[in-house]
Figure 1 (cartoon, one colour):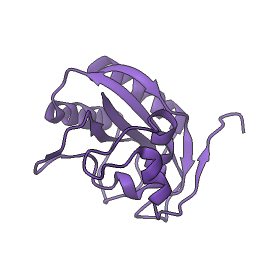
Figure 2: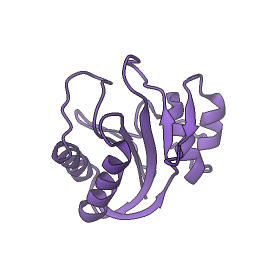
Figure 3: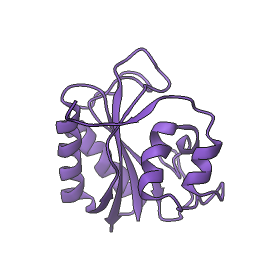
Figure 4: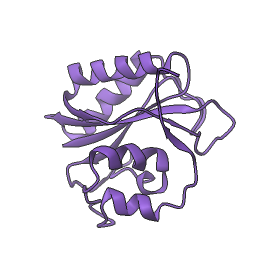
Length: 161
């Protein structure tokens, strides 16, 4: 199973997540599980709007590099423009885990190198994969969340507000 993190903080955030999930289902594989939506404080560059984040579990036949090509193509198709690292974006799709694979190339690092440092990743991941064990750190998602020093706000999002 592959774990993907979706994030958006520009435009119609809910619609953008739905569009990304539909394209992932078409081009990447079966979306097996989706976390709730979480409204999260920006990380890295903090002077920007709040994000909506969601974690997906996806069953894919794509190899990791092919998965990266597809997720980046989806981002581009949905209007992603890379202007600054950690800057505002209409959509971001990060590969968190690819089964228990450990991979480091010039273009791709799995598991995601910042996964264990980010509450906006760990909270939705803990909702749907609390016992998944990080293949390098050998801790479950719940343990990583308990150890995480990131104090950023992560709030369960309700579209009824």
